[in-house]
Length: 286
Picture 1 (spheres, rainbow, N blue to C red):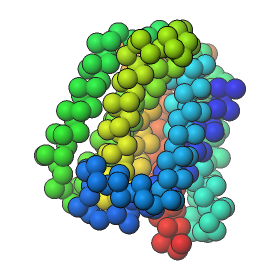
Picture 2 (cartoon, rainbow, N blue to C red; picture 1 turned 90 degrees about the horizontal axis):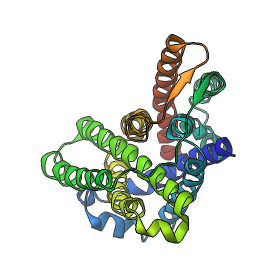
Picture 3 (cartoon, rainbow, N blue to C red; picture 1 turned 135 degrees about the horizontal axis):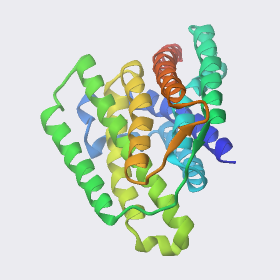
Picture 4 (cartoon, rainbow, N blue to C red; picture 1 turned 60 degrees about the vertical axis):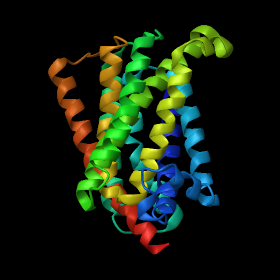
């Protein structure tokens, strides 16, 4: 069930990104990194559909993390960009289909080898409230620092900066989702309201929403998505290891595990570039 939920979350996140990027691109450039961007987008029914897809994806990811570890769920989500092929099938673009399809099969094989050949520990420990304060402070401070010091960047430099920021924030948000899922599992829905993860999720989620829509509004997917695709699972998995003490070991040895993880990251990066360019081609045709 964890695998199924993670795959559903990956597909839904990919569809949501496609829809939201298409609508955010229509917003004025000056609205980036402002609350007014959200108020403008909220008037667009298609963008609302994208947000609804995001919420469904969040629910699937939440349930997946409730039963599985970050080290298990995040690699599956990282390869979710291959679900861009669903967009290709729906909207009828043919450019790049063969390349993305081949890479998708290769990525699926690498992911299967990783899951079948590794032992992944899982924990439902709730991190200390200090971690919630640190993550919240970094998210809020990082947002305003980016707005003040990097808000005037243009072109590719802006896309790279936005991709780095969103990827890092997505990773931290995923860690908070795991903490909230653990709180609900241990204390129940009402009991979880006494712990920090639920409130941390509101703070980090709000900042994540503004920054992500600003990235969609001002930068092409082919620049931002490769960075997000690599950074989000990497940050979340590192936090899972360092803070939650999750661990992963390979039945075939440490060298095999390192090579397999490196291969998965490389394939994910290439897929991200190819698939995001395919999405841009679809958007130009629609």
